[in-house]
Image 1: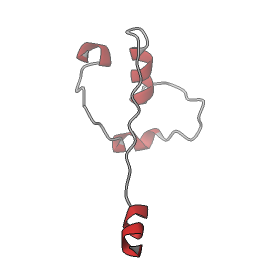
Image 2: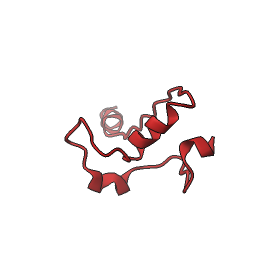
Image 3: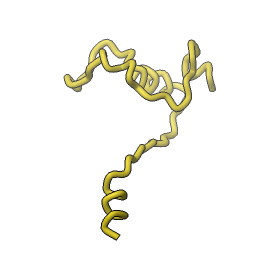
Image 4: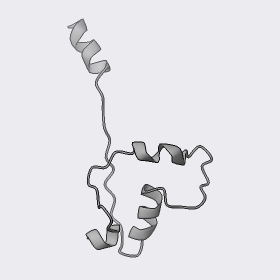
Length: 68
């Protein structure tokens, strides 16, 4: 029983957020998600770590709107 509880406590979790966007707001979401903005209100954004991002669906060279 204790081993099972420890295993549950050590489990990794991934959280995906599903949100509805309009066609005009997709571009803003893409700039945010792909770190294409020129400046950020959050000073903790480390652009050097962007290559470490996880992609569940890679759009390749297409924009989000082109993929839709």
